[in-house]
Amino acid sequence: MKTPFVAGYDTSFAVIYKPPNMHTVPLSADGGKNTLLHWCAGLFPGVLAAQGRKPVEGGAVHRLDYCTEGLVLFALTAKTFAFFSAEQKEGRFEKEYRAITWNKPVYPPAGFPPTDKAPMDEKAPFDIESGFRAYGPGAKTVRPVSVNAGQSVYRTRILNIEKGEGETFRWRVMLTRGFRHQIRCHLAWIGYPICGDTLYGGGKIDTEYDFFGLCAVSLRFNHPDTGKPVYVRL
Image (cartoon, rainbow, N blue to C red; front, side, top):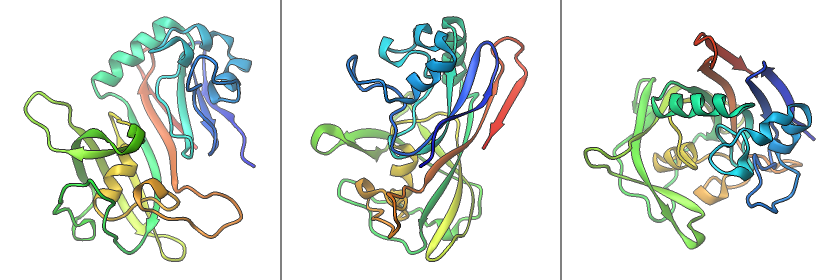
């Protein structure tokens, strides 16, 4: 079983590895302590007082889905959180992911608009762009939508696609601004849902554990005190 570990830190931030099947932050004020935030707080207590978006989220600068593994950035002070929030709005973060999909395209689930994007005909790098809307019972998933002038556009940049093990592809994907389920939704939209992602048509892989083929493998951002680039990679 995978466990959290510190991938990088200083006095103002910490980058922590989140294993799969662990929440980044509590889902509610009484959401329990078995989260990456509270694991981080055991080493960096200031993260709980960093006053992020919601008190329950502490200094979590961004979150990963429950099934997704990889690097998460935490601010350890309110000042640092404010700096990172401004950097995010300006698109100055770079987050690289590794995604594993099946190597044969499938039709996306209901609610997806048509797309003419054929990734195997594209030369990487290329972009998938859209806005998003909540979809389905309990708004548990999202769907891509076209955007008008002045609305937010979310871009998933495909850096590379190569053959993986068995009947899979391995994708290198970059985000500078993220939306809930963005990579999961965008890859499903073009016919290549993530392996193990049953919400978006990816199906299960026959393994001894619950496999989910998405991992946040690197973070690049500006240091909140010096402004110099910081790069952390698994």
